[in-house]
Amino acid sequence: MPTIGSIHVTKDGCPVIFHDDFILTRKTEVLYERRVTDLLLEDFLSYGVQKEPHKVSKPFLRRMEDGRVLAWSTEEDDYLCTLQEVFEHVSPHLGFNIELKFDDNIIYPCVNLNRALQAVLQVVFQYAGNRPLFFSTFQPDAARITRELQSVYPVLFLTEGGTAKHEDTRRNSLDEAIQVCHEYDLHGVVSEVRGVLKNPSAILKAQESNLAILTYGQLNNVREAVYVQYLMGVNGVIVDLVEEISNAVADFSKADLGQSRFSNSVDIGRRHESFSQQQLGFLLRLIPELIQQPH
Image 1 (cartoon, one colour):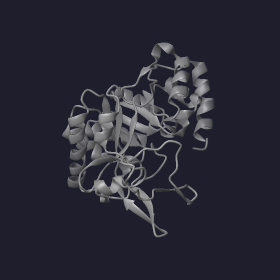
Image 2: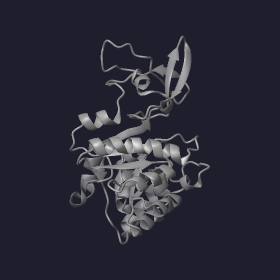
Image 3: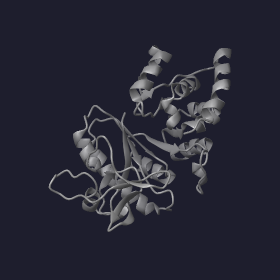
């Protein structure tokens, strides 16, 4: 199930797809950061590659981790688009993981969250058809409101699983994330993989509550890390190397292989009443090594 980037709602109420909170651009040698949600749709679409070749595009830049600012350049690129366009042009047989994106540094009044989420849901209900999809978000109140506004699609709570700290304590651990699911009647948790590896007992808590547990993060491109999660009973992993990890999971147990209803990758879920001594020894040796890997 492909992940549909991050959904923002423009100033004039249109859901669009863009990973970051800001667009970085340049005007007369001066750098500007423009918040996506402060832009009108026409302005947002004017950056980068243009759908109509005769249109002049505004410069589109990216800031590297070391602080350098470079021109946006990829082997294959496409124009910025709306959520509606993705529904219209992607095969209806492909499911979507729709991440509802909100700025970590803003305290949103519920009325603002409600307005943005209503705009997203309007597009989803008009264009999704029979396409399987689920919603996910790091914003706990957005998760709650999305669940209150509709009961057709699953809502999962995204968490860093304790690998980062936030003023909102609901975001600070995997256990808190599970509690959020209980309180808001959500369908599961999508955790940074290291949060799960450091707190494997949380998987049992989730299973006892019939909650799905998925993970994301660079470690999910390491087959050994995925194997550990397979042994632990994680339901699915979100990965970059989909084919490679899918093949690895097939090697784990072809009988258990399936397509996850929740992720853009492979369903690795399997329930374990207990680990064998060999499996337990493998976990105890491998987990510290995986957690300490650079990410």
